[in-house]
Length: 620
Ligand code: M6R
Image (cartoon, rainbow, N blue to C red):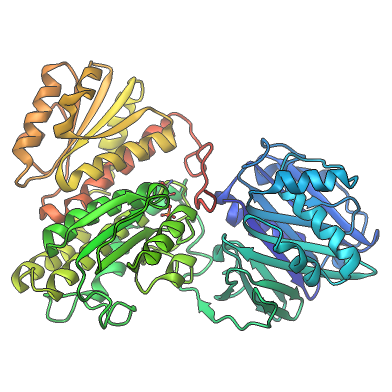
């Protein structure tokens, strides 16, 4: 949440570079956007910002003649905001300046003690223009800079006073000299350098247009950018070398291409994502999984007595499915918790606990905090994550990278199914390592996983999608939606409801099918659409009985799955190819993603940027 960019070029203009970066990062927050540019004429920093989308900033820039030579504009910073303190508005938009015009600052994070710091500054005569916590940083640095002269020293001198977390960048122009400095504690910040200039961003997506070799700042680091490179100092002020990470994707992959929305593009990428995530890890023998190259060899998975899964949102649903898989295939007791709850528990973790953290971004603040707590309580940390080099990956002892590629749509789709595929692989490996899973059973799961790619493809044909569009049209006026599932498909019901509510703003609830009779059944009438997810398998008869209870009370049932009897017992159905029960969530999810997408599209919602949301939740 909140996107930060910065650039120090050998020759200007920097404005289009910053705007391109902000456009890529807009999914991190779209309450306002702004730039600060080193102004060659006035010997200060010029700030141009606007509430709302980057398109508004474009308009403002068009109305604002930059009365200095654009070619001189070599250094600048930019920000796209997800509001935490103060409503979306022009004044609360970043960048924020101090009392004078020599510097401006952009910030992602939360300064928890900003009220005390603000009061102190106010009593020293400082007038604040915004309601944000971030403006405090600009004033503190401005005052420190008057004494220190050097921006790195000024930034360092105030960091110790801050409670909370931040990724920040400050641009200073004074005496004809530009200084661009960044710092991080918590939210991510990455840098790259090319012969044309040096760049910073809170997400590597904004850097791949310049270079695929990026360096992440560690917590506590401060960086200084110049046109010909950057320097980094650690939290103790010592010069630091940080290893560069090679980014696997290119900027074209992060683009929309011919698709109307990133979400649709990403839904359709899922068969290829499955292949990329799974196929190279299936051992040549076909009956085991090979994680040797991924910090998961050796003894990381040996002696696991218990698994504690931790995640948020869609990743949590993947984690709930992972728990069924790990218990079912590997026979290891597994608990699951919301990261936001786990992080404040006093967890009683038995020796041999493996903390399994699942995250698309690897930067979710709650998941990171929960992971650290689990490690503090003696757990070994393994992550399923989509972003190599992210904080989650760097802090984990073992990692299963999902090869979903950049996921831009705020509603997670391909990252979710990639997490499920990774969970299958991990469960098989755990089962084989302790021999609780036979070679034959492992081979059956893995060979079916290979076939799943074409089964996924059959859910993305023109005819199938047309059926879903038709269903969306006939349900878009319903008063509410219930999604019901059991066993390994219960979390699929939760995910179906989450997808629908986050992008279409329709009220939807996911429920365990067998639990419905204990309360939610009171909601059933013809205005309530009830999606029943029922895969052929041991629980199919039980789910069918739950479905009949809804039908008997006049509920409008849509069956999704492969159980033939359920499919013929309902007027509305989305048939899904049959597969092993363990793998059925991967298929059953796809029609639910498409249904949510088409309902949202019919309702005219902003699908890739749903209201109030941001892609990567780096604040608590
Ligand atoms: O990056 P993460 O996977 O850690 O993100 C977790 C959730 O914030 C995320 O899944 C969120 O629920 C999505 N909006 C779901 O579509």
